[in-house]
Image 1 (cartoon, rainbow, N blue to C red):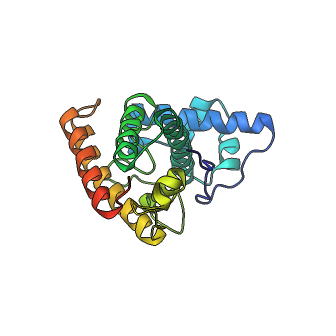
Image 2 (tube, helix red, strand yellow):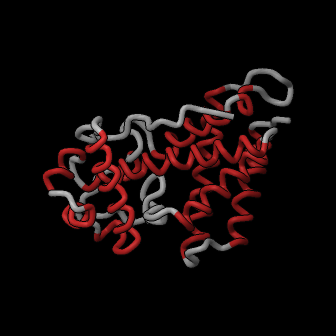
Length: 227
């Protein structure tokens, strides 16, 4: 399977880097942000500290990002791109894939990134915690100003699934609006259970992770029956 995994428009990022040197600085700033998130959390994160860690003037940071919320939004967008790329690779090696296998692989890749990707425990595709830190006005729309984070992720997963979600068991076209809604509900449920799984265990509670897979598989099997 394959899909366009480029970032969708996110928020008020001031300008996207074009030249190689600017792209390197942009990436270094996001890397610094991710590393600091693991150390101090989203609440204590400041743009000044991010600039210092990235070894760039604060003015350079503000050339790319309007503020803390914009910085976190860009990191969330990069995380989603990385997640989709890695999930796409898993799906390609596991083909053919049905709804149950897609669900399991999607949850497993998310868990792997929670364990290994810097900053992902604090900001995955949005803020992972329940408290909204200072400097963030709208944490529900970090990925896209026009829809909430899970709705944006649902659309990207829908595109990634391709033919898997195009037709049902009968071979007839799926209702794409219903599919988007079902994926959004599945994501909301998975998000809640996985937050619980990682709340007291940095590696994620295996029993809760297994229950997350079971819950989403069961729901999608009823809503989107596929071979």
